[in-house]
Length: 611
Image (tube, rainbow, N blue to C red):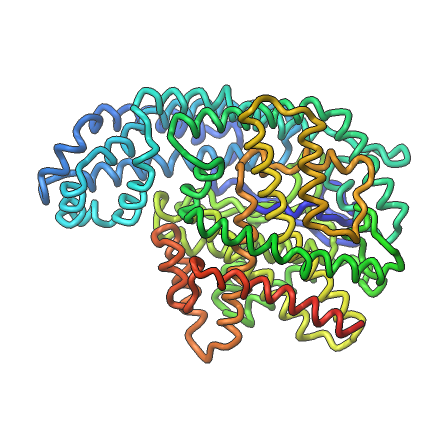
């Protein structure tokens, strides 16, 4: 999943494609279920419920005893059954989520999504005991069981990783209550945000636009078009500010309650635990990026202001194209060939996996009314395959987004061999393949460019994408820290949240960008703040990591591709330290982040030299 804030291009398509873009694909979800009323879906909904109840009946209260039976124990049998139910629930939930993302404004799709959420929450409630009970087994008995039972030992990485949650797990009944009430609590507020955002319309000279096309006008070459888009965004955000402030206050309080009951010390510790990354590593990353603001974003935006003939840029000029930037629309076939060619130069196997997404309609590309904004790659379940959602409008950034999401898709395909329990990776590592895919595509295009002006435009676009991915995402992280810290003292007003937003944006963007009236509301549309608190630092983590990884690739004589594929195939079975060791990289080393940030700084140096 990916959001680059204010990712912009002029709206070019509505519906099933347009002549300037070519034939844009829509995904085929029949590999999951034939339709919303398919008998197989109805059957599997019932099967998931029945299997979960049967599993609880068979295994609850018996795991500790099974662990003490050594090679005669049946913990492996239990885990195989548990994984099968999780896979089935995942298939059902994935289908409902993808159908809903295709048109969140459709009442029938919304009903299916809501009904499935409720039913799968009810079913999975019967599975909650399993992980909790496994963590109550004494360490010696658990290790002995892993050694004695090959079926159980297969899941060793998952079982040992699960132990990291042990200090924060609660009594079974409380866990069940938290789980079941999530539908009417956190989940309901998430859905309210999604449906409210989908329904928003932005009036530009009498034309009513949804969010994605409006954001994309912020990259129009005409400054007046950009200004009108920014003012339309601010106007509608202000009109809905009470709703978004209420959602933010409620979810921040919900998180505080959960963190307090579980015993997390820092407001972001639950995210660090989920990411299997140490707080000290994230703190070092955030500190390094903040210290780099002057030599990265401040320096670049001052240079861009000069290029545009401005003393300072308005906030709506931040992503304005340079005069050198080609304005031709990039058709879908050209975007496809560009990405597959770049992937193929790195590894034919990588290109072949990515090509499957096109050949088998695993991509949904057009902009449509009601369609979820942004872009994502959803892994679904290992017995099926990932799907990619885009809002493709034919701009260079859209091509990079395609490269990004296909990187996720390749990763998800390769990791699928680990099975439903061990395929998924922490967010910090999940961004590695996606950002690496972008880097491959960018470097491939840059190597083919000899025109000085075109090269400048490409370098500038890459620097801006890196600033969006590293600098702005750490600024988002700092914004969330301010909001969640202050929320512990009581409800926040819209003005207070807006003040926090302006503080972090001003600090990160620097004096070359003037934040005009209305920009204080632009925090409202960032979905990561709602769906996944503190997710955003994973983008900066992934970008800096990939910068270091790509440097290793450039200097490697042979064998890099094999090690890279091994890293992707590992899924969630290894800690980041284990995955990076074959490349000679260590994220716990304070100097590690300086390497990644240095890549961005060097690109800005190259742009200064071109001046």
